[in-house]
Amino acid sequence: MDDVAGSYPDWLTKHAPTPDEDAMDRAVTRQTVLTKPRGSLGQLEDLAIALAGLLKTDRPSIDQPHIILFAGDHGITAEGVSAYPSDVTQQMLTNFVTGGAAISVLAREQGTALHVVDVGTLSENFQANVHVDKISHSSANFRQDAALTPDELIHAFQAGRRAVTRSVDAAADFLIFGEMGIGNTSSASAITAALTGRDISQLVGAGTGLDGTRISQKAQILSDCLAFHNLEAGDGAPLTVLQKVGGHEIAALTGAFISSAQAGVPILVDGFICSAAALAAVRLNPSIRDWMIFSHRSAEPGHAALLEAMDAHPLLDLGLRLGEGSGAALALPLVRMACALHNDMATFDSAGVSAAS
Image (cartoon, rainbow, N blue to C red; front, side):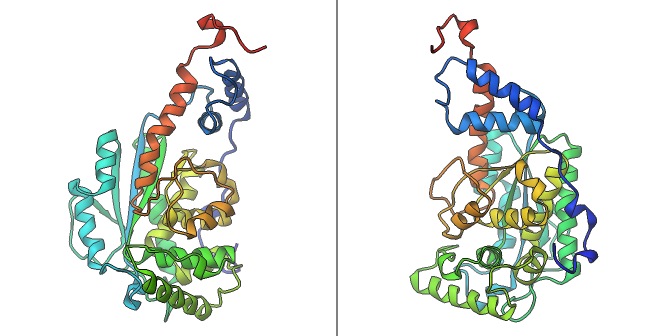
């Protein structure tokens, strides 16, 4: 924890519940008697067992998943790090709530609630079905200043927590988080470098569609930013890193990950941006790691470093780099199928099938 942690909310480090080992043991036993060779369903077996521990039952199921998407703008876009202008963030808010975005389609197809939260966009307009919880519009340009003030960082953490509370109060038993913010792959790349020590040139990808020349320019800009904030060593404290090179939606994600685990609600982690927030959250509160299931491996090169840092083994690898929580939403049916296979397959005894000798 940072040396300035005394000014931050105590709940950030409150220990999350420990998975129920008895339920996991019962789930392991059940897996050994289902009509299949042991281990033949690979990660799906591990997933069902892990969910048994998190949901405290040897017959886990996902009944009320919610998707929460946080949106914020980034001052670093002034440096030309994105192929799209910041206006797109606001325009996408409308697209999310009118059903035209990828995550909107995925949520609708699965009958899953989608909540959109503006935690720091440039928008000053009211939009129906967008929950506004912000104290400023956009982060600062972190090539010249800290991305967030301490008050903005605290507010973003609390906004993430409030969003989780609303879903938990609505009986959500599984949470997917997504994000939207032009420029946020720059922030995620800088966070990844500052927390893992990886060279920024190995972490920067196409983002919104940059060509090779602009990727190199983006890497140099972010290298300058890390030097400006004395974060080149790669051993940055998470609160400092989030304040210096983070963003409103990334900090909200960090608070949401911690709050969800503390509430005993499993999390399906999306791609690069969400994983940067997830690593910051785990560094702040290691007890929450057990509550994270990793959905997919992003095409963004920095994602591999984040997965390695958290010893994470994602379910899918589809070459995605969209964000929005789309990769996690695509993995949700797989999580549910893991539970269905675990719960509904016959046992050797019930099916009259001979077990292995």
